[in-house]
Amino acid sequence: MATHLHVSQSAPTQNFEVSPSLHIGHNDLLIVGPGVLGRLVAQKWRQEYPGCHVFGQTVTTDHHEELIKVGISPSLKWTGAGQKFPYVIFCAPPYQSSDYHGDLRLAALSWNGEGSFLFTSSSAPYDCSDNGSCDEDTPVVPIGRSRRTDVLLNAENIVLEFGGSVIIISIMFVPHANLDLLNKEDKGAHAYWLEKGSVEFRPDHILNLIHYEDAASLSVAILKKKFRGQIFLGCDNHPLSRQEIMDLVNQSGKFSKKFEKFTGTDDPLGKRLNNSRTRQEVGWEPKYSSFAHFLDTL
Ligand SMILES: *[C@@H]1O[C@H](CO)[C@@H](O)[C@H](O)[C@H]1NC(C)=O
Ligand SMILES: *[C@@H]1O[C@H](CO)[C@@H](O)[C@H](O)[C@H]1NC(C)=O
Ligand SMILES: *[C@@H]1O[C@H](CO)[C@@H](O)[C@H](O)[C@H]1NC(C)=O
Image (cartoon, rainbow, N blue to C red; front, side, top):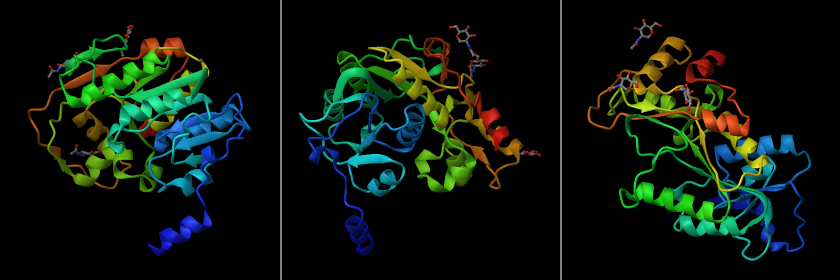
């Protein structure tokens, strides 16, 4: 507790909404929910637009000091009718908010309509969960099928109504060297499974991966192109089964822990995502073309 108070006193929260005179530049960016992805987006955004300001909207002050260190001005409370931003990206996960859709509307209202408004979603709503091929146009499950997909579909509809775009991002993973810096859920599935050794999932379930840096570079590329009301897909086009992922991890010889086995039998097989259309429309290619390529670079 003492440490926390000390931190709070030495680094007062810089709530940008308390300054109505704050000048927002043409390339300034608001990141709602600046976690791992948001911070990488901020870094790449500043490389694209040196001198721009990047703002972060958070639900707690827990990481404000870290955000300030990486050049993101954090804020806890919504600006209300106040500031609007030319670029807004929403990367907050649904479970962190008591009013996810309300937050999303506030994010949309914080967009001045000039640059881009981009919402990060997941591939859960695509209706092809049993070894099906899937791309940007694959039909989604109907509203009412599950609470989880309803939340995402309603969120996507809100964003599209405001003229924003959606990026559906598959499972993200990060470089080995950074693992210790991250929360368990941010490290990537392979690191999590390695830690557990044995996991109650079926081994042949298919996963679609994308490196965090690539998810960030694709998000930035979409933001820069000022699309309106479009849906994009972020994945590496090399779907792998859980077992294939862990075989690659073992064969790489780059992890000291040994994985034993998957023991599940009855979950669905999963989807095979293909984002060739997104790549063409955005003019983007991943730096890490596959999980195997990523392991080679470690
Ligand atoms: C899943 O689909 C792939 C290719 O489309 C096929 O090779 C594989 O046998 C399928 N797996 C199962 C369990 O049906
Ligand atoms: C892990 O890889 C080594 C060689 O790289 C191999 O001998 C061993 O059988 C592999 N283990 C598993 C569980 O696949
Ligand atoms: C992805 O889809 C495109 C056309 O939609 C096709 O040409 C390409 O072969 C597919 N790629 C993979 C990896 O399946």
